[in-house]
Image (cartoon, rainbow, N blue to C red; front, side, top):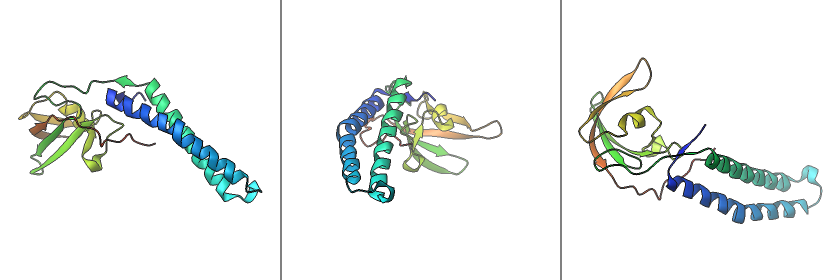
Length: 167
């Protein structure tokens, strides 16, 4: 699947790849060498654990590099008063008579438990490009949809705390 990434996402992924290649990889290779020097590998748990950690790091590097290679770039800029990437929106759900706030992010940063929804989720798709005061119908599937009213749009785009998902 081709991920939609902002320039900020790309920068964070490149930084993680660099850290894994230049800092973590040499440490893990050293741990494998150290564990191997302890003798019999057939009963050497430290060797297998070090090898597994090294392989997990290499797998993460390949995953991130592949993600960058196949990414679709999206802008994180939006017009004033219009919902776009990295905006936090406060929504009113009339069905439940409650308000909730969500930050609109790319799919690799989404985390519903932290109030971060993907631009590819039904709610994210429905909200993009809408304005404060609009009532939007969110179509979940062919059988179910619901309405939300946009109460407030916070246009700050601080994404320093956002993390790139692990696999």
